Image 1 (cartoon, rainbow, N blue to C red):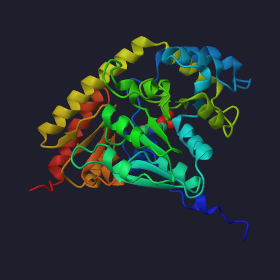
Image 2: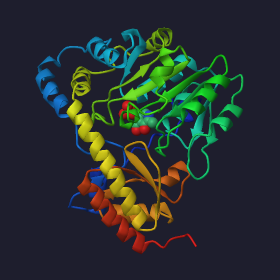
Image 3: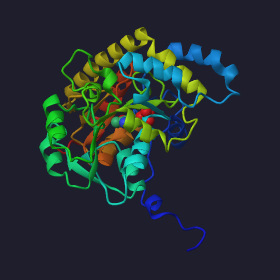
Image 4: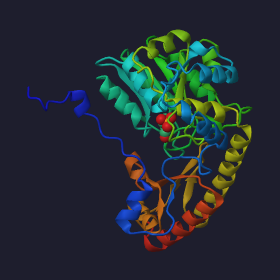
Length: 374
Ligand SMILES: Cc1ncc(COP(=O)(O)O)c(C=O)c1O
């Protein structure tokens, strides 16, 4: 074996491909005007203002290591959710929590059942552990998790069942009765992971199956949450897992000690208390959802009903061609072909102005790229 030999598990990984950076578009297309990025489900209002103020005040402490246990942040979140601090683990984004799940629970030959398509990092966590991801196709048409088909895919090797709720890339949600059905049939050595990266957009009084309620009633459920979406802190990298104390204690073991930096902890604590920003962000999102839906439908396109901060638009055209046309107009979105949805675009909901710019560019694209529907 030579020095260049790479672990087969690492060799098998497909590199994560993030939304195209604004700088790349400027350079490659020579665009000098405004570029709007609606590709990574970030908050279009920018970072939570309370976080910025708090981080500025905290900068002078940045010669010190952060609190390895994120105690202050844990107290804030524990209070908010009504759980104990030993039920929380913080990560460098919820991405890291997904990797910690793999490191903690998966072994060679284990299986991870997910929807298909789904968020790409579940595959990476499984592959790195020598486990296999079993992707169960979403329902046709409304693109929801198919609880019956997922249960049919369970075997004695199933160790994790991961469902993003709301789902990425579709924005669809799984109902309480489907979660109950999955839990009824969950193999005895498996956990149900509900990735709630977009849960902050859901009305707290709705009948949505919040993972926290299952965790409190003792079900083998793990919730993943993040400050990257509604709270506008994607660049700080803070996410967390909520679960039973024994699950969290195990996941803490492979975590690197100072994984959430001092400014990120400060930003997250401040954001947790900024109710005005939360309300404004939700309102902008709801208005933008209506604006984009109406605009796309007016062009003869259809939209998958979404509960998150993005929507899937069926352009009824080859999505790469529509994407290229949008890019020339300085608009960056995600193409559906990477998710096996070749006519769709995943579009993050922006401000009213950004949405209008996107819709203008979409109109141009629709005129240039012929529809492939009869
Ligand atoms: C479903 C889902 N889970 C997790 C993440 C990761 O979020 P972060 O690592 O920024 O917390 C994302 C990001 O887009 C996501 O869509």
